Amino acid sequence: MTDSDWESSSESSSSEDQEDIDFPYGGQARSILSSLEESIGRIDDFLSFERTFAYGDIVCSLSDPSGQMGRV
Image (cartoon, rainbow, N blue to C red; front, side, top):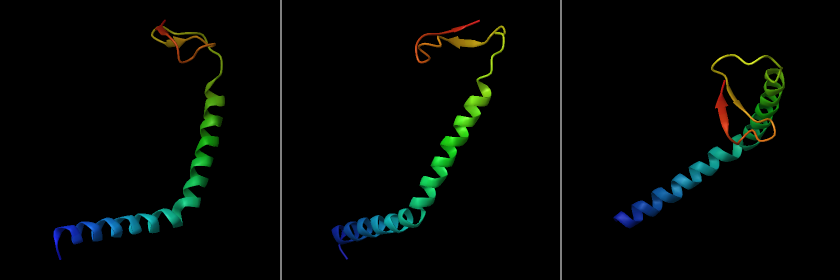
């Protein structure tokens, strides 16, 4: 077997192996990600309660949360 034969054989084998792995877990992975997004949303809702600021808190504008940040 030459080097080029080995490379093409290993490339096709690895891509076939990858397809075999992706197919059985594809639906399950989507379900897990969907559940994770829902859980993160619930956590965000829970953590977004109002409290006073404490020294050292990092804050940002409510209207532009990805903008400039500051420290209390």
